[in-house]
Length: 282
Image (cartoon, rainbow, N blue to C red):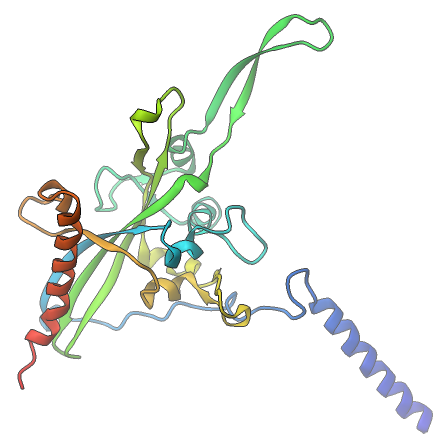
């Protein structure tokens, strides 16, 4: 009887050891399944009759700012983390995420992954090199790879609204647009950086993908949050570049220069935040 008991205990311990060994990975001694199984929290329903104020806002996220660097790194995909642009490219290519042309921000013209790669500069180059066997010069065609690290900014389209049912000012992100900054071959230093909007992503469509991928937490690796959490909880730094206006596409920089542009951006932000207070009576 004792032999049977010892045998059962031994089998249980062996099973525990094998299970812990199976769960060990090169980056962690335990399996991380929390974020992988996450689902985005649905938006609360808002009736048109309850919206007494609404404003479309465009803002820009600069990935060079320290607070925004978790969206830029890693520059090469890792097992458990992607940069935001690499995650969006993965979603477009493998998860059926739809990218839209930047001719407008109304999400009207879908783009293929080939169209996006072309906008990144993908293609072929011809080079002249010597043949190792004959020594003669010959032309060789080599593919030109894309560099997603050139995406250093994002444009965000969002809607600010006041819901009288909950008496709160709410912000809903509508779309994301990566902005590529690069130097074209043949340009001189005086030409400076070129800027190009790559594509628009309809944010509600991307939320299921964003909710299942982690963002680096500089304070605690065990408490990382998802890209969906990052945007929903507004864990990024940005500045307003445009609001809905009669001119349809009038950006702040079109009527201000330098420091005045940032001051105007702050003024618009404060005006929006004050809307909530202005609707209250004491």
